[in-house]
Length: 180
Image (cartoon, rainbow, N blue to C red; front, side, top):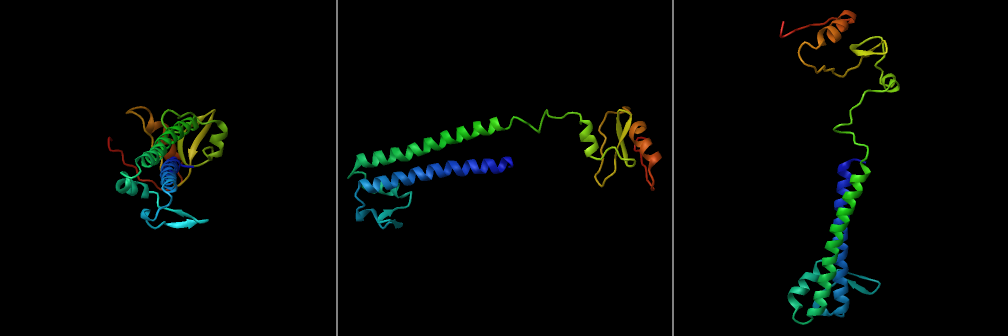
């Protein structure tokens, strides 16, 4: 699973917690207000119980706070607790994600290939661009991918890679050395 999909799932989980908590607070408030007609039409009925949109709590709080302040304070506290629960869940999931990535494949994880990995990658073939030598066997790349040798000036790129490759190259080649 890619990191972005995990992060997207984490965001969805946090929003789900907050929305579920706010919806629960709305339903709790409606129940304690006796599902009065002044609350407006419910979104739908579930087994005879009116179910309201999650944000209706805040509308009711604005309009009816003077009539039942204790109920709205408790309903608001329930909604606020869902926000705190979402924040705690986000922190917990971030810690979990950080602990899951013990095998880092980015910075600082480079290493020399093992003999089995060299053989599996096909670098021990008889033709291709010379890359180096391992235990007396030449490492050669014969594929459609480009090869780039990155090394400082006068470090042996020409005599170690270019000249052996050109001496064994079966086809035509155009060579241009900009430094001469």
